[in-house]
Image (cartoon, rainbow, N blue to C red; front, side, top):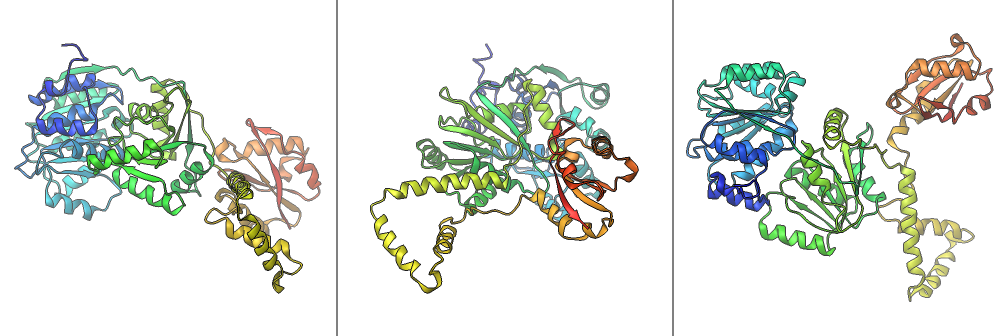
Length: 543
């Protein structure tokens, strides 16, 4: 049987799992699924060498779910993942795959979540436990997790666990579970320390090697934006939605709860033609939502990866990865929803500082460097809002009742409070007309602390003989104190011992320079490049 002829039903999966797969839009098994499922169904150990994004989650969870005894309410399957994000995603996948099998429950355990919540869930019972090594080991040591009835163990992304320092915890867990159990281990690479685990804890595993052939598309313009201190992820999303031109936008989040949370935030920010797409929706509601999205009644759709399977809407011009996907294949599937019907698509990825390594993994897999874009500034938002406001005014110029409003304006101008102040009246009406999108915004969060420097304690600490200057480069640009010291000592012709304190911040720096140096001489240095970054200099403190 050729690879294309293989179906999920031919692999021996039950009708309940096949029904769940059909709901999720799964058609044919991936290579690793086709090879793993039959062996895991018969209880064999599996050692899989596969790049992230090969479809491992379904490859191990489908057969292990089928082998569960739903009448026995105790942990039978344990799945170890290196990160809580992956644990949550795997847990949701297991819930979706098992939704037509009565009494099967999944619990996800990870650090950072309240122990009381997790202990209560464990007391209620579940057959599938998904979690990170550290938290799982904590529960085992506390006696709140009993794995005496465990039948199957999965170690996912073993090399990532090694990199993150979790391998010792994994080995400790392996020592605490029943010796008679089935093991499936997956790793993108197979370093010696992981190979040793397979020798010590696995029984003649069937080895599977899969090479992914993930390719990116040149008709999609990709970029990422790093989440910065001082601006929330929600605010960042709202800003990009406001400045981007799009017909329809698809926003990917990690969990079904996040779809609802993000939708509520956007509604508060004035977006109304939005909907969510998650695994809890009925098929009829899903179809209705997609119909409205296709015909333009909805412009923004917030979805999880599983819920968006099979989604094909030509008018999607922008895909936003609000939450970073757990693997490269998911990323490619996500951004592939745009750039349809011969049009250029746009894809944006939000990256938390601690997620940078996962961005690099995606770049290595798709063999391109994704460029960074900066968050939209307040000035950009103001410009955008003025453009839209001007367009509204132009349309109103041709309205039939404009003369009636002119007469009304004359009456208002003649009010005593506005006599000889028609410009004040215009300003008030302009402010009223702007609604919930102000045309005047406060400075960006990353600049607010500059005012503190100028108005508060920092000025008091400046020597009487010094002025304080702000330089528009900082740690984020790779700047160190010696870089600033060298350039100023050379360009201003001043010995370093006469330069005052230099302070580095994330996006700017400050320097104290003697009052004897003319201010204009310092300001004229604006435009000089430091580490390939243009310096902008202004004075922020004079004693």
